[in-house]
Length: 494
Image 1 (cartoon, helix red, strand yellow):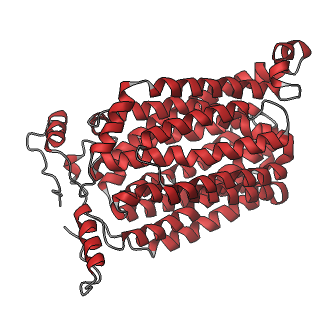
Image 2 (cartoon, helix red, strand yellow; image 1 turned 120 degrees about the vertical axis):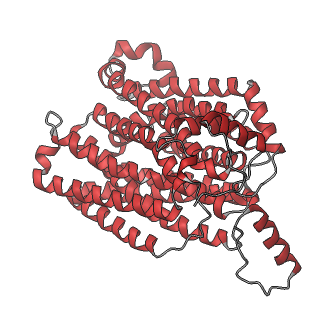
């Protein structure tokens, strides 16, 4: 199926040439405009979900002052994302993108309503007691709703391929990063203020109401969908084998996934200790405002990618940026000064959209559209698993050993020249070590043959029509999946 031009009577030669080029890529002529509508709706959904997520973390630490609690919350969230990403990827490949987004939003809304009912039924005093079961039940249910919304992130990445011409996808991915930054800015301020002045109860009511409005808006959108691969061509609902094949079929792509996975070990450490450090330094309300200021870095990073792209080699751009991320993270708490922490985390956030947009742009070009949901799900499974593993390891070590040790004169003495003095030098040591390891790992990645292979693959591959793939790739998949009659490029099941 080809998308017909909505303006068949156009006589402009330039417009005709553009329409022909878009049709050759399988992209609707007004696809970019549709993408912008989807992006705005996703922005509202992200703001709502992030509002609930930030509020939970702020509320838990403000009430308990326990790093293990916040670390466990962060780890549980990323672990849920990891466990469900392959399932989410298969859903994205099996069903229309709008249906996937709508069902994800509806399920998240139902879960948030259920958790709000639990909160008011049990009572805040009983829920905040870490020794009882209610806190963990409340947390798990709330995070489940936030994780379901991650299904939209995978669907959004594939709609970039569906609706945006190949030469503009890096810019579109930068716009996605900008939206994420705006979400962080808005939610960090309002989550801190909501918890500080209104409490968790009103926060739940506000978040649930906003998500309901998001669903109503989404149902009114129209997304021009392409045909969907027949279910029999996707091995199973959790398609590990199909995702593995789609990743390994592209030389060097598996190395890219592994690099991002290992790089996320540092992000897991930062995720564990950043909120406690900020809350101790600025208070809940102050940390929410400070986080909003730092989130402008995320917005600027996304805007920069949207305006300038990622260069001719997004793989190289990704590695260079990840190396700088490690350096900035290592130095973010080198002295216990609020301005240093804010500036460093601002730079950290400004670089994150570059890394994420680079990975998405590479996958969108080198992986056939029909497999991108499973590839993004496969990548998310391993990349998301790294952060909770780090958080689960770092949180108890930080709470029970490193932080108390470096609060003593004897424990701080070996590190005082490097880290200075203060109450939170243990957190500084954790970020220094993990950030340094991250940078060393990037240097090793640059020297690898997989980096050169993937860079050549990206440079040599021409933009192709959606669903098109080399015959050798289709034949290899048939062999892996046990199908003696491989599907032809562009063929769709009914």
